[in-house]
Length: 92
Image (cartoon, rainbow, N blue to C red):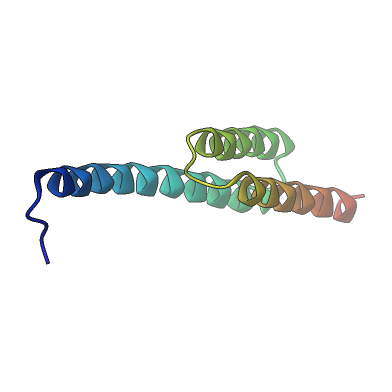
């Protein structure tokens, strides 16, 4: 059902804009994480570290914007570091 009140109509427009913006930010976070995980298979240390920095930066940016909760961001970053450490221990 569509709203009839002007303020409710405006609120719906604003919510849609925010939803699309948040969706784009979340999508970017997922893409950066995927590219990092894919790079782990290559064993190119420099590339892996570069992509890790980019992924962490994107996650932090999403947190600052309020798109994802700080604990969610911490969990994501922790898992990325764990994957990196797991790879490092396997290569020793």
